[in-house]
Structure formats: C-alpha cells, structure tokens
Length: 250
Image (cartoon, rainbow, N blue to C red):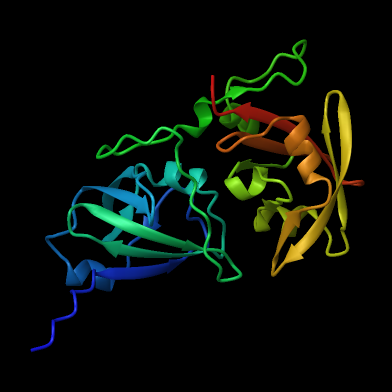
C-alpha cells in the first residue's frame, strides 16, 4: 500500500494593495473554513528562517485582520505595494510566510543577527543608533523620528545581504519612484555632509534599483546587514537624496 501524502497546511495568498501598512485583512473564506482555530495571538515567520514576529488578530467590521505587530513586520521586511505574500498556517499559532516582489521572484527575508532558538524575536528597527557621518550635527535618535520630522519626501531601506555585498544593488520603493522620479531618470545624487555620489538607476520590471556606484557607498560607509538607510529627496530638480544611516548595533 502506498504512503499517504502529508496533509497540506491551510494557506492563503495576499497581494499587497492600498493601505496595508497598519493592518492586513485575512481572507473571509479562510476565516470561515478555520473558525475557532485562529488565535488572537499568533506569529509570522518568513519561510526558511528561525525569526518570528508576534502579531495579534483583530475583528474590525466583521472582518479579521493582522493588526498589532503587523506594522513592525511589514516595515522590517520592506514590504511594498504589489508584493505577493503566501501564508501557510501551521495550526500552532504560527503562519509561515513566503514573500515575492512585483517581478514574481522571491524576496530574501530580513532576519535578526541574534536569533534565539525556540523564542519569537521581534527586531526593533527604530531603536538603531545613527552612524556618525558628521559628529557636529545633532541627529534624531531613531529612523522613525527622522522620517516623521522631515520636510522632504522620504523612504527607508533595511540592509539585506544583497544590498551590502560586492556588486550588489538597492531597491527603491515603487510608491516613491512613481511619485518623485520621471521615467527618463537614469541617475540620482546621494549626499552625506562630507560627500556626494552620482548613482545609476536600473529598471527591474516596474521598480527601480540603485546600481552603478552603490557599492562604493556600501564600502565607504561600512554598511552591513540590518543597518537602516533613510533617504530624503532634498532637491527634486536634480534628484538629490540626503542619506542618513542608522546602525543596527549600538
């Protein structure tokens, strides 16, 4: 007699559209099929990692959402509009999450550098300390404070291995490039108080990447995995982005 194939884990798919930054709705059909088994407290774990994020579910207008904790997960994984996520429910209060970008290629998950086996980790992005690019200039305590107080259009990126390795690149958020860069834009200027670089831009499907010259910034500023880079568009005419770096280690 043949062996019975293992039971498939309940799953659902979400394409990120609209305002998904604060909460994410769980498909109503999935909720109906698994009514009574979905916990108020659960964990989201990117597939093939040991990291997980504590997230609460909340009923809003007869729909169930990932609410408290979802914002931190979305920001840490640099989720963007158009990304596709597949959630597989292990029925032990944990969802494994596969993430894909707009090109339908898998996104490399961001993981903490200090993973404690068997315990959910919740990396605090905004607790990073700013790297000293100009000691004479007072700096906000966190990336979140800088973005909230900036008078310019901003975006932030958390450094992944592909972003800091030799020959790497840096994705730019689609919402930002659509609003603030023209289709013909091929270069941007990136400045810190003591230097300005001219960096090439390449298309990647609908999104844009910083390519030529990005590796020089990585080397000179000693960027590493989990550092947070905040970019402020200080000059929209020549596409000048002010770079502020928040280190992942205090």
